[in-house]
Length: 112
Length: 111
Image (tube, rainbow over all chains, first blue to last red):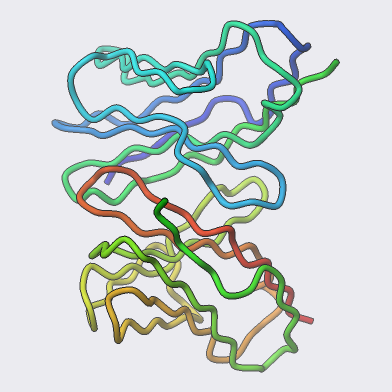
């Protein structure tokens, strides 16, 4: 089974600053990778996913993540954050069984 | 727009009660899942189902059971609720490896 490590439990940042949320997964022959976002008192929403093809994937709200096979990483980045990006972010990885394993989450806190 | 609907946003139950958490999806997905979410622990898989009447234990099945009589509905059952089952419960469904669609969650408090 996959294991997923989110290295930071909390990331505070000022508005309009860049941010990187780190995620590492255990190596596997094939892997599908996901980032989910959870706003307060809501369920999780899929932010972006890597299934195959281009290693750089983007979301519609300015986030991007890069699949790095050699470093077994799938870090999430945004060049300029907004207050509204304050949320919990979960990285997930799935192997052949398609059942994702989730990291423990990173709380992104954007300060004005 | 695809939807996973959890019947209750908030529930308060007494210790020892039998509790049913309901989840319905409208995407004709084969696979459905129940997670619980606790601060600092992330999401932990309780049970999942890959077909009607089929179920598999996840990482923390103790104290829970599930029912899937119809493809669109997956119920989580707490046979005798305990205070350590106070948590946020999340239902999700998926087709083949294309990412989950989650419900809004049910915050259960057992007193």
